[in-house]
Amino acid sequence: MQSDRVLSKRKLSELVKTVGADEGDGETTIDGDVEELLLDLADEFVTNVTSFACRLAKHRKSDTLDTKDIQLHLEKNWNIRIPGYSSDEIRNVRKWQPNAAHNQRIQGIGISKSVEQNK
Image 1 (tube, rainbow, N blue to C red):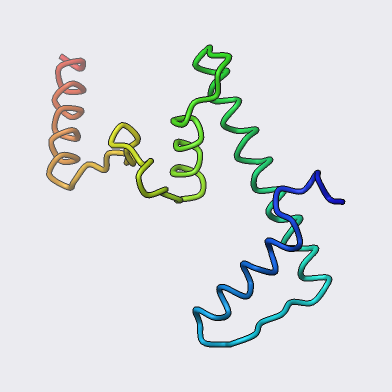
Image 2: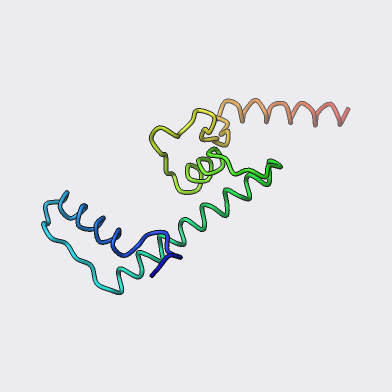
């Protein structure tokens, strides 16, 4: 029995059959090595997400893992948004990029300061 796995071989086989049927491939099977690889990847993914979410909870000084911890990690690090769980609180934060006009104004301020310092 593989109770330490996140996904059982039977469930993985059902998933492969479902995806194969949706794609019109009919009966789809996977090689034993591929099956093991997919099971390992699923375990690693869940471990990674859970571990990082726990660190986020600890960072906000909480002993409880909340949905927002998992959401934040999935959205920021994996670009995965879960329908019904994504929130407006978690937004993409872009670094501000000044335009050319702003850069010229800043340079103008820098030049006027250096002129005043030389007086």
